[in-house]
Each structure stands twice: as C-alpha cells, then as structure tokens.
Image (tube, rainbow, N blue to C red; front, side, top):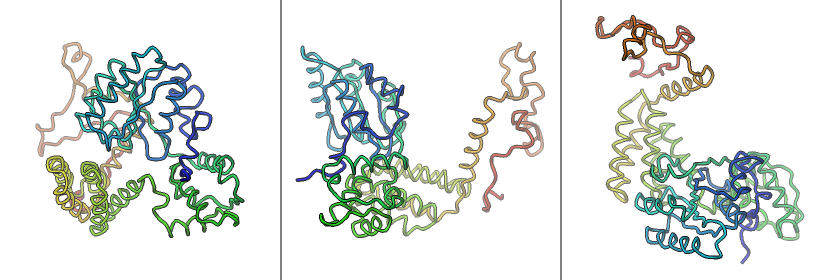
Length: 413
C-alpha cells in the first residue's frame, strides 16, 4: 500500500526541514544542540502539522541517540515505566552513543501521575525528554516537569515556506515528480492549508489521486476548492479538524448564536474531546468576549470548569451545554481584553516608567525621608470613598486611556 504523501515527504535531516528557522536556522538554539550533540529536555509547543514529531526524529538521528516514542493517548504509567527501563538499559550499554531520547506526543493529555512517573528519569539524565503539545504547557504540564524542560514554540508555516514545501513535493516525490503538473494558482491551496504542512501535502495527495494518470494535474484555486468540497475530510487525516471545530465553537459563542455553539459543542463531545479543554475555552471566552458586560459569566465558566473536572464524561456535557448557552446569549464586551492589550503595548513602547513618589511604598524611615508615600490621599477619608489624584506615571498622566467602556448597561452604569 502506498504511503501518504506527507509520510513520503517527511524530512530526515535539517537540510530538508522547512520552517521554524528561529529554532533550527544558523546559530539557533536547537541547531546548536544538534551540532554540539548536547540535547537537553524540552517541549515543543505549536499547532498541528508544523514539524514537532519530525524535528524530534531529526534530532535523534543527528545525535545518533536511541529513540523511543509514546503517545499520551494510548500509554499509561505502566508503559512509561517500561520504556524508561529500556532507556536505562540503553544508557548502561557498552554500545551506548547518545543519551536515549523519549518523545511523547500530545504530552498535554498525560495525567498528573503519568507526568510524575517521568520526573526521576528526566532529572537523573536517564532520558532526554522531548514532548510535543498543541496546548499551552503552562496549563497542561505539571510544574516540576515544566521546570526541568525548556519550552520552544513552533509557528505555522508562512506562504514562502508553504511554497518551498510545494516545490519540494513536486520535484522530489517519487509519484508527483512523474506527473505532468501545472501550478496556476496557490491562494486556495495555501489558505486551506492554514500554515499546516501536513494539510498541504494531504491536499496535494487528494488532487493527485483524483486526477487520472494520463491527464495533466492542474493546481488552481477552482480545482482545490471543488475537490475539497467533494471530500472535506480528505485534508484532515491527522485529526486537525479539532482546531477548526473549536474555532467555530468560539466564534459562534462570540457571535451570540446558541444553536450553532451547542452544535459545535456536540461535535466535540461526539469526537471524544477532552472536557477540560472545552471548559478552559469557556473560561477564556467569558473573560475575553463577555467581560464586563456580564461579570457573572466568568464565575459560571469557572464553576463549569470545576464541575467538569469532578464529573468528567458523559455527564460533563450538561454543565458545558448550560455554560455555552449562557455565554452565547449573554451581552458581549471585550473592553477588558482591549484594555490589557493596550496597556501591554504601552509598556512595550515606553518601558519601565517610574512610579510616582506618592504611590510608592515607604517601609523605612529613609524612604519616608526621600518622599516615598508623601502626599498620598487615602480615598476612604473622602466623600464617596473617592478623591482625584494621579495614579499613572508622569509621562502618561492626563493623555492616556486604556479602559474604554463598551456600550452596554452594566458598563454605562
């Protein structure tokens, strides 16, 4: 049986690897690790199809290290311990070369006990751990393990990198290189790929397989769109539809459409999505998109997250649905989201502006003598528990606003 194009085109060396130049380009951190053959444990965080698994394999090959792989979806504590014992035996072998590398795909799906079982081997140097995750490791990886690993962020491929990948496939693949291929347009191809190398190659695979061998293979926007409409799952063989569905879910809640939001929720439930993943997105939605128009939304979303952690599937679908409908039908405001982004932009622009003297803490006599805390007005000493005084740094006072209330009853009040 013919392997899929994405597998046939999987790079074996850094020279063939496309993208992530901030990590593997000349002088970059992972390239230096490989060149010095001193690989420390790390976690690769990024969307699907950007080369996490491939990069781990390339590192193992380049450093001549035994390579073990586990999927967090299928492996339990028992399997983790068995692999660690194999790695320990490898590291003691007289034929040992590089330290064994243990690659764990979807490490964010490991339970706390599974992650705990890795700590000793990582800390003692029995294995070099390379984890791959599509979720923020700060939320999904236990702190002791996170403290032993660097986190490197992988980015979606840009148009230039997708073009390079397309060119490589057409020139180097054993099947495509024998076809009469005419590339007329790439906008749709790159748009549907969404920065995902695997998606792009899966689409090419679909186009090749659906075009008779004696017919020119035409790549243009119309052909790509038509073929994907006929077979919408064909470019999603690796399960990346997960990201399209959560995107549709978030946008339906934001757009105040409870029916669409519940439908996409049902798709995730039926697909076996992690209930905590959904609940976490509801918490983010409540803060980002409902915000101060209805502060109770965040309380309900947080309560939903707690309940789902306690009860899991299948009953967890009920509080998730309740929260989804509540958020979708709630008034919306992103004023707090915009305020913090605006303030972060100002911090990035103006740096560490000094705190006004009257706002500074004055725990010592010397600080008081220097004017720290002097002339501070205690608001509770004034009518209505309010007094006008300067709170922003001097350079921002009087001409800067970060929080701009949205037009809804609660914020107008």
